[in-house]
Length: 285
Image (cartoon, rainbow, N blue to C red; front, side, top):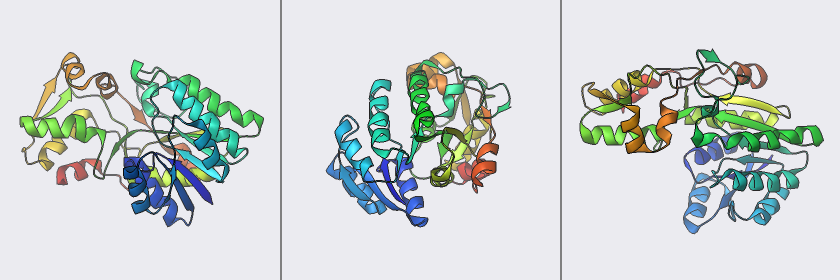
């Protein structure tokens, strides 16, 4: 299958390109600069010059593909919807996979699935009208699919590294917010990439939680990271107010208590995460 990918030079994007190629697909990827073009070429995809802010280039690239995987993050909900619309217009009945995130559900109050009610923090509240419009194409001959990844780990770059591992290592103790009892719905980047590939054959209008089914607490993650960074398990609690001052609005997302099951993707797509011991991986880094 000919697949066009946005965000192919990024953390998730390079993993997705590798998985697509491993499954025999032909991949083109959006490249907004020479640097991103080199990154997607190195990953094995053919770069296509353009930007998310140029719907015309997105429409043209999607018109030459049989499916699109939209991974890139736009600067606003309006920009994201414009990009999605341009690509869906070009694809027609081809599969269009849009990226959301599990943070839109807010606190889940136990283990939930994709049908849980939304209660997003302000950081991601803009996603609702975008995703509703994307999914509405299923009623008019389109083939939209949405994947809402959990909190990623694995590989060389992840949010946990930026906001917890790096500053915590510098300070001598890995932080966690409040008492650290909030659960994080983790997923390994390579498992998530396999889900995107599997979702090329999903039914129109389907939504999948891209989660590994492992939901450790933030404090457990901090303790494992501390061991992996040679800090002998040293951690420290910071208040939500301190976290906001240090991290910005994303602190409210890290403070969410979320537990998810990947059962729908298991059932529909036969997707099985293989990385199921994240705490061991953190402790070994």
